[in-house]
Image (cartoon, rainbow, N blue to C red; front, top):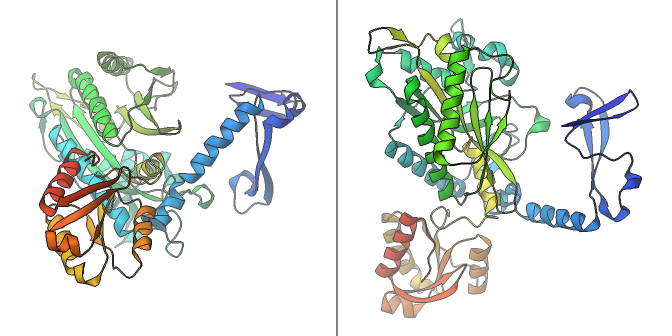
Length: 476
């Protein structure tokens, strides 16, 4: 990090690099981008300023490459694709930053959630559900009311008690842990929840699915013994790799963040936890950077960024030790010696939030969702009304297998039906005429591979079911 100053009046904390004036840059390597208004210091009650956006590069070649990346990013904008593909919307009549999942987007989200739950159950997690609001005293116990009040919505009065809509899930899991006497034999406990939380964000900071006011965290907490910590971290990182790779993300950047100047917990517990995180990364043979002092005040952490199709990195997964909440909630287990001890609590999220991950996913594949995730996997295009009932029967049979197949209404000319299916990014389509009706077949066209020939209905549905189960594309 560098600091650049102009005289004694203007200082800029910036990673750089800097030049003394734009005159030292090639004119053809500078480009104006846009003009926008911005409130002074982000306060909508203050005066509006004019903001000019520009970009500068070492040479025209770099500028050209940058423009190409920006053009590609614009084509992949999840806000545009979300509307075009009818996946989701933000309804201003309901308020900014609140996501409405349309039927097609909901189908994709359901598949993501189903896969997430299956993977977690297979790895020894229990799925839990907790309330969306709680008495304000809970948030005072957790410390959120003291340290996070600006990010929380206002409280509500309920029968002379004050309640708070939740900004986090963790305090609820702490209460569940405390609900029973725990033995060292019970640990580790792994509790996972797709928990919707609500956080106050200024309207000027909201951005599609990437920055919202209501979102669902793929949250989980592990309560374990100190000697179990490294193995638990290894398992979390393996699970992150397994789940993210299913969605096409297999390039990562990892960062280990260590103890900051202000922290809670003893030197010993910080040293042991940090060693466990390092040990887990070394055991897996994963390269990582170190952010000295970059951990939270309550524990060290590992952050994982994924790299998308056009080279951008996105913060998604995080694994974080917490020495604070077990103390605040007085969490205990009975040790082998019969003494009362504090468990280690690990926060972890793999997607971060479903909304943001969905936006990243849509941009990564430019709306071309893989077959197993596509909201409509196959569309049948009837050439004539005489085959419409046949198409409906095929679609019903497909739905019983768990496939997402729909029939075009047939009100458009065939060329228009095909174009609509293409624009809808539907992976497989079938033009159905009298020949197909008489033979009990379907003529199949893949969006990626073109015409694949004629299949019997049973053979085609069996192959599509296999592709759906294996998360692969149709190839024959």
